[in-house]
Image 1 (cartoon, chains in turn purple, green):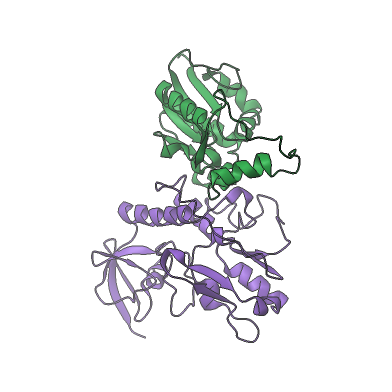
Image 2 (tube, each protein chain N blue to C red; image 1 turned 90 degrees about the vertical axis):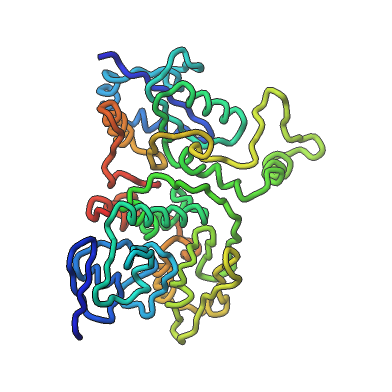
Length: 229
Length: 180
């Protein structure tokens, strides 16, 4: 596949045509924060907007755009970094994220991202919107206070019979994740683990399982000193 | 060089952040050469006698007395720091924020298993602080200059933060930012 040439923060770069901007930047060693995106997801979910950058002077989510010839990208500028941080702050105030009492704390991708960005507080008012928990599942607990509506569980997860177990209900700020209880009750062990790991926050967790690893041994306990955003 | 004056208070918190002060162990002895505690649960001084250089607030604001104390701190402190998750985002006390206040009070005082039927009341007296509609993060009510995350922030983080602030600007390594 032929390469296309583009500019990022004044530097000339190249990447194979038809790759997304986020992949093109990562191929060139640029750090772009991502949350709902992970390698290989086609088409991308494009829901969290954390990878927002400027393309030809306009803000766009880097995972939703395809790299093209002579594209001019602003990615690691103070303005863009602040914008990306603001988006993460908005995710924190929209849900009810009590990290101190969350079973996913230390392994939560939203939390890890906020650590990377050096987020100490949100500049936006906390909403404290009430959300209902779904504790009627046999194996899984749906903790909607922590859901960031990334659509990983609804779009990327199927059970062993290729059936979708999770879906969205409602629109806009009323959007809620729902769980098909019949399919959930039939989930195999490895599928349960798959969906719990797929959820970037602590919205889908094992029922009857609490904290299983001490602080200091979890995924993002020592992340901040490895990657600097 | 004269010692900098430091005041601390716990609002709607659990005193865990103050426990972290004690958890500094020998660091506290280093720090005490640089700072002097003014109004604080650690000194049991309950009102401001002087203007203070640094104020540390633990806990969010859940009643009108908390609000009065927070404003008093802002008025008397040159630099004000939110210490810990409760001060920063309300923390565990803020879990009541999506429940109507009347429902919370009914559950806590009337619906509780130890309540005696027809003789238990919701406490109300002019001397008692009035509970606010919800628990507020401190920076939504007054200007906060710095934020120390953690539940609680470790003694190491508090010591590093105070020492860096005494040198000019509060900076802590990014890897020490933790929310639990």
